[in-house]
Each structure stands twice: as C-alpha cells, then as structure tokens.
Image (cartoon, rainbow, N blue to C red; front, side, top):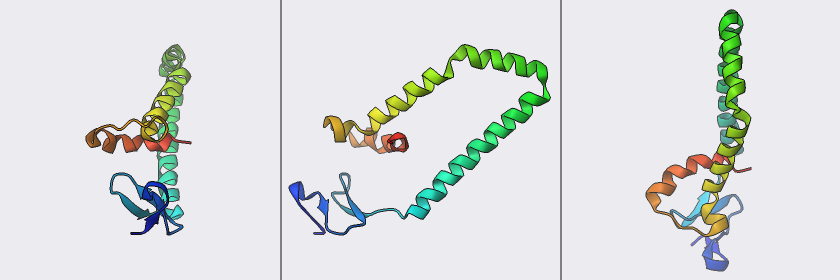
Length: 116
C-alpha cells in the first residue's frame, strides 16, 4: 500500500521514500528542518573556532605550542580518512549489498551526514 515498482520499493507519493527498516513509504523531511539543523551545526562550529582563536591569541606561549601540536598531527589526512570511513559505513547496504544487524545499522545512520 502506497508503493509500487520492483520489489515494491518505489513510493507513489512524490515527497516520500521507501524505508528498509519500516518496509513502508515515509514522508520526506521538509527542507526547512534540514536547513535548521545545518545552520545549528555551522553556528556551533563557528563558536568553537572563535573560542579557540580567542584562547590561542590571548596566550602567545600556548599558541606556539598549540601550532606545533596541530602541525605534527597532520589532521588533514586524518579527517579525510574519517570522512571516507563514514561514507563507506553509510553506504554499505546500498552499494555493496551488505546486510548488517539492526542494532549496528541503527546507530550507523548518524554517519549518513557524510554522504555527499
């Protein structure tokens, strides 16, 4: 009911998608709610960067050691690996056809934010 097509996984309503967990069509979130979440995440990130910048600029001795630590960690490579890992985790079922236990996949949905 409410779906058609191959394996009955195509929703009849245009603003809905088929949920593999619930086995039914679910109404899509409004773009406004997604935008609010993204703005909140962005605002939080800006506040963290501003606080770190204020702290580091206030204490020049700390700034020098902080910059040495940051440059020695090679954070860019680690962030790239983390984002790639999260993208693979969020697409295991869709791309590779791997079906994992529901307990594992329920918390893995958090990583879908990294799917571009």
